[in-house]
Amino acid sequence: MKTATITQAKNQLSALIDQVQAGETIVILERGRPVARLEPVAGYDDPSGRLARLERAGVIKIGKGAPPLELIRMPAPKLGPGSSLVEAVIEERRSGR
Image 1 (cartoon, rainbow, N blue to C red):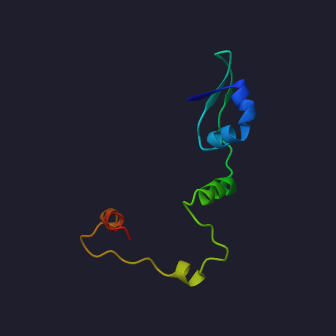
Image 2: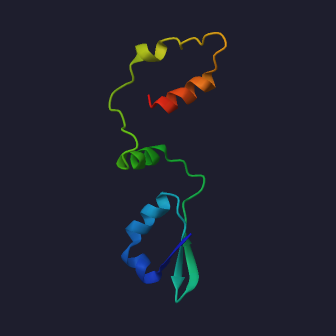
């Protein structure tokens, strides 16, 4: 948990809000005593806001067009006998594909 003085909170409110949106809780201090707490709102689901933050961070890129329906409608590949989907996913992640 981070702390900030009232002066810091006034001068750097935007930066503190960014930290709160990233999940951080910030305690506001007045003369060394806690007087307020900035924390993320629990239970509020804003998927577009989350996606926008991930896109700004460079984690994802939001697509602009509709998904290719022929790809979605294709049947899933079959696993061979004795193979494990979990092992296949782990191997794919290890190989970096």
